[in-house]
View 1: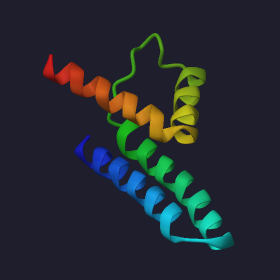
View 2 (view 1 turned 30 degrees about the vertical axis):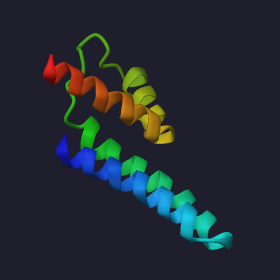
View 3 (view 1 turned 90 degrees about the vertical axis):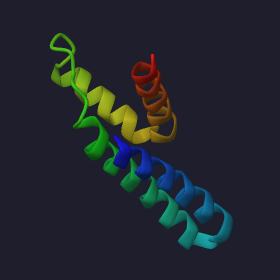
Length: 90
């Protein structure tokens, strides 16, 4: 999970710096493809390490979770990491 957190923070930093310093169509292309590449990497690194409950381990549920995490990774992984942190601490 530490690698996933590093990729998450790096992805947020990449998006912020790309938005701040790049301009024109290059910025749009880099940020558009970078957004999906970071979401893909987070899915491969983090979601493979999670254990799915046997009742919710259906194709539809897993595909829905992975697509949601890919498209909305800044929010979904923030919630996931906070939830995992709370679970570990408490």
